[in-house]
Image 1 (cartoon, rainbow, N blue to C red):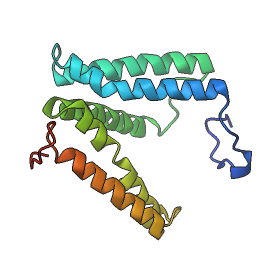
Image 2: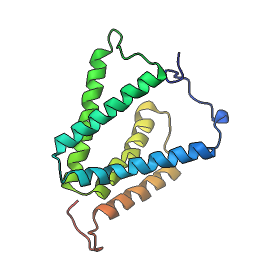
Image 3: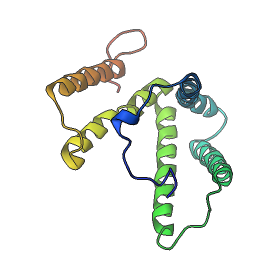
Image 4: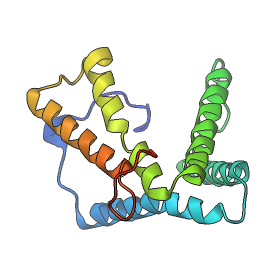
Length: 166
């Protein structure tokens, strides 16, 4: 089993602080990821929504094929993997297309804020479905503060005046 296929959770005692290289790569990843909505908004001036989604999906596919080759991983799917792979590919494409559409209909900041509300979904799934993380009063207070922050950003116009156009 390769290191990617391993399903064994990492023990908390084996985690170490980030070194300089790891920290640098992490910050580079965050900067590139954070620039995505702005780049999409900029590209909307030249391309339609679905074209941008296709370009993003195509670029990601090329990168993944190169990465698989670099890692020496086979590209051939095993029996029973084609259906789930197609479903996951379609879901990923839908996510990219809907994200691009959201940026076209709003702005990069609002789209980024919405996409980063995933933490509310993760907390709910972990508490109510997988039961791997339980909600504590401290976590609930943190979620309430985060939700109020989201609402403040989304209900304020750029000049600071309140608006209902969320």
